[in-house]
Amino acid sequence: MWMNRRYKHCSECGAPVVYQVPADDNRERAVCPACGTIHYQNPLNVVGTLPVWEEDGRVLLCRRAIEPRHGLWTLPAGFMELGETAAEGALRETQEEAGADVEMQPLYCLLNVVRVGQVHLFYRARLRSTVFDPGPESLEARLFHEHEIPWDEIAFKTTRETLQRFFADRRAGTGWALHEIDIA
View 1 (cartoon, one colour):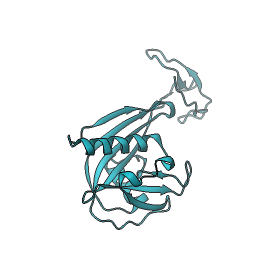
View 2 (cartoon, one colour):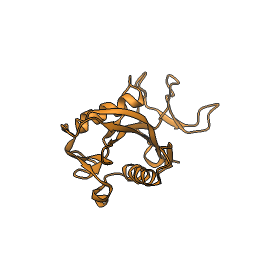
View 3 (cartoon, one colour):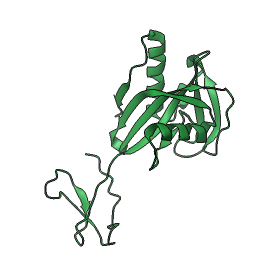
View 4 (cartoon, one colour):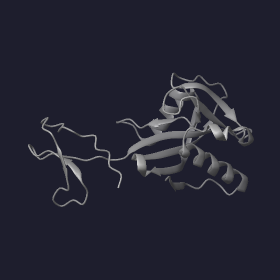
C-alpha cells in the first residue's frame, strides 16, 4: 500500500503524531496522541486539458521549464487549487502554462496514479487561436500533428496515455468516450 508519511507533528496542537489504525478505521493514519486529531492523507488532483486545433487535428503541447522532467513535452496541467472546480483548474493551468485561449469541453481522461497518490483529469479543449504566450513554467507551447509528436520526449505517462487514446479515438471516428486508466 502506498503511504506518504509526511506528517510529523499535529497541525492542531503541534504534538508529535504517531501512525496507527484509528478505531472504526481500516488504514494507518497520522494520529495525535495529545489532542486526538486524525490527519487524513488523500490523493492530489492534477487537472489539465487536451487542447486541439480542430481545423487540422493538431494538439498543443508545452515544453517544461521546471522540474520534474525539465525540457520534456506535456499537456498543460498542474495541481488543482482549493476554491476551484476541476474544469476551472484545468482552464487556469492551460492559460498559465500555454497562454492558450480555449473553449472547455467534456472530461476526456481520468488517470489513477496510485504509486504517487495522484488522480489526473484531462478535459478536451477547443483552441480558439493558434497564438500562444507560455508562462514561466513552459519553455514553449507548440501544435503537433500525430506524426510530429516527440514521443521519446513526453514527460509523463499520463500525457502519453491521453494522447494515444485521443489519436486512436480520432482515427476510429466513433466519438469521445471518457477513458479511465490506471497507471502502474
